[in-house]
Amino acid sequence: MNTTAPALTGSAGPRHLRALTAATALLVTLVALAPFPLASALSGGRYGDLGALRTGVTNGFVQLWAMGDGRLGELSATADFWARFHLVKATLSTVLLVVLCVLLARVWRASTDAGSRGRRWGLAGLGLGASGLAVVSLLVVVANLQGAVAPLSSVLGVLSFADAGGPLAPVVEQARQVVGSGASTPAAQVLRADFVRYHAVMAMLGTAVTLGLIVGAVVLWRRRLRTARTQRSWRRVLTAGSIGLLLLASAFAVVTAANTSTALHPSVALLGFLAGGA
Image (cartoon, rainbow, N blue to C red; front, side, top):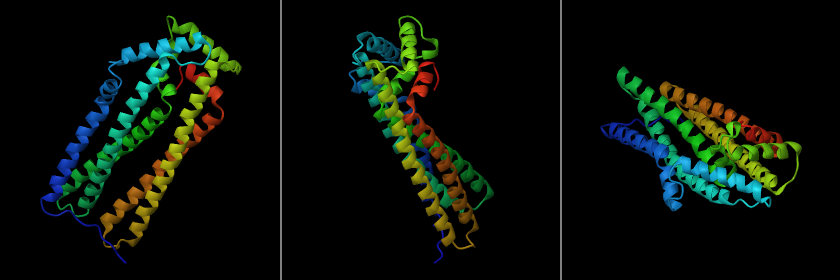
């Protein structure tokens, strides 16, 4: 049975596209600006800006190694704050991703009956922009879910381990020596356990996203096969969408494999992290 893509007719199509585009712009602004102040408000305003957070993380990291019993001290508060930050950002990014998916569906369907060449080019540009932004939004959702589940390793990223100075410098050097030697001190165990969790979470999320993208590619390809050959524009859209999802799935598969390897063998990667690596 052949199926065709429903075209957007009348003035409703353009109105919907304008509304969705405006919603996208608003959500992009919220994703970029809202998470930190919202997380700060939810945490009682303890960390009003990045400088205050960095000071807290620095103090907490020094305390972790000074106490010697694995207690997080102030790192616990900074990690809780950072978990809220990631949850807010993940939520807003998820809403943005949903809006972008709806926008892309509208654009693709409208492009099959675009009329003038100018409108076709306009829809193509909007579709490409929305597609790129959807990929970025997906990455942001996954990264922030990872940070929400393992906020300690994530919040330590605000420190500059490569250029550590002041009271942080000798502590970072000690941490590097302990982790590099494979010693099992309480502080090293805490760092290593959260580092493993951090990468294991990404491995699981990456697996789920990879499988979801593959399923999406198959669904689009099957719909292409059921679409009449006379609907060439719609078939091209479905082909491009299917190939794009497979390419994105391949990228996530590579990321998943890398994080799985790190979770299984964390010491070298943790030492690199303490040396200022990613």
